[in-house]
Image 1 (cartoon, rainbow, N blue to C red):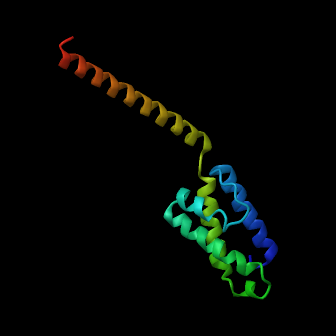
Image 2 (image 1 turned 60 degrees about the horizontal axis):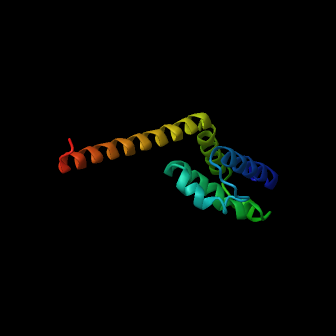
Image 3 (image 1 turned 90 degrees about the vertical axis):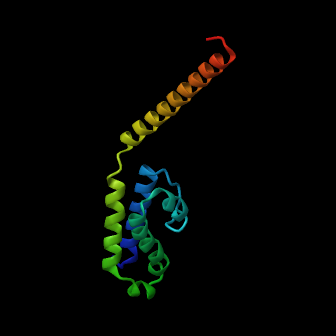
Length: 124
């Protein structure tokens, strides 16, 4: 994994998975850090940070030898396992159900408010 080509393929694969599953449109791991922090769980984000911090080192041939390959492999597998576990259809369904629940709660609250005002004014 310490080969620059291997890490480039890993970076591309992680960014493609983040683009597909989370909608992050960054071109580098550093640029994707802010939205990733908001969208990834803490444990997965720590693994993501390992990949992101190693990116500049692996771009340099001599510094690439100082990076721990086993830590990068473990971090890559953690991030990829989380991203592969995301079900887009379930997320879409959850979003629609959340929207429907919010609208229903708003309509119920408005109805109760109208009934309270009508009762208070003596129309009921």
